Image (cartoon, rainbow, N blue to C red; front, side, top):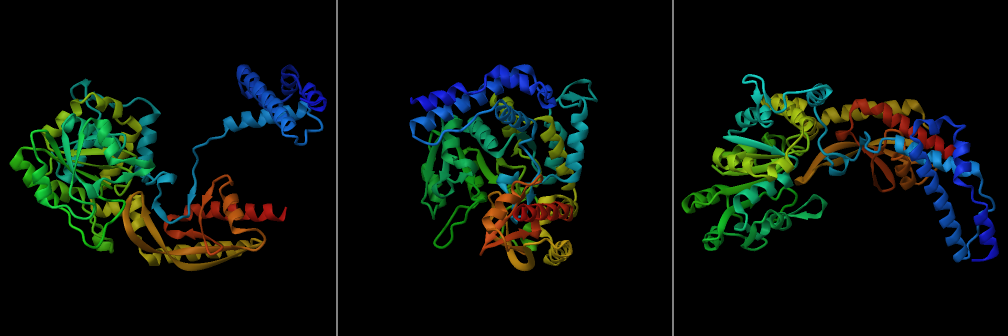
Length: 475
């Protein structure tokens, strides 16, 4: 270490000096003394390490390190702790069930119920009629079963948990027969074979990637078979020379052999979307009508509710799953339950669900209505006369997202924003940094705002955000 580096190191402010300086600032009073001291140590240590590394690499050393400079960095770190990391964002991408942006936004009634139930105590596991302990699942089970035709229902914290719990209950240390073409990978690089392995089930693959026949399942059945499992490929499609076995055929096979049949439906659609021009997507009701023993699906995909894993089916099978000790580790909390109950209330009338479940409304909203909203936003921005930005409308395509309707492109209207004084990439980055971040997409050097995922209540944030990035460029 050279003499110059040693000299700079001796000039680093002492922690007591930084603390004394911070005492003059009201910011430090908003945090505990221990936290302020710890943060001071971290900042001073960081300064020391950076000087040592710079000296070793022959880089330019700082000319002076002041107490005030160190205190400013301490304050910035402390204030970052005060800022919320999980925040509302504007989804202008056109991906309706955007996994990275929280998938399905909750309906108004679900939000109200979450607030009401969490404000104080609730009868989460208390039977008000009998005056004794009850089951949390009973609050939404009746509605789920009435809408779907299932005999019983259980809710856990997501669909991967639902699959894990069902497999562990029905096929631990026994074989689960699955078509090779259905061994999908779900979000976060989790794969069905890995979930099966953790459940204790033994994977027995049958068929090929593109073709599986009933005979393949029949030949695989033996003394070690615990379950026949079908997985709906909700996040991809194989086309061309393909064949798969219908669920009804597997149910019939399972009954003949005395083996339970499970369908991992994934998306959990309760509404026939075919009448809106979408590709065929099996509904929960249709799947249960086959007589399948158990079906699992997500609460925050096409159902349009909170993140949850829903397990439905035969009363005897669901009863066994409920008794599994893993169920306690995977169960939902009162907030998820409140949101799911309110969401399912809308499915008592399908038209009500289409009008009030935000994900369904975005999927099925007529293009004419989106055009009208786009013109309103365009007029608002043109009147704002934001220097350095130009606006226009163009046709585009939205996506369902969330591993749902993977090949479906949905007609939409895009607001195109061209930046005159800064790069499109820089503008996109700055929009992610405003108070209510705006997430857009870029194509052909244009910022694109998809009106299928933008509501009128987002307009003021978009106008404000665009004004801010334009002003930053001027400055």
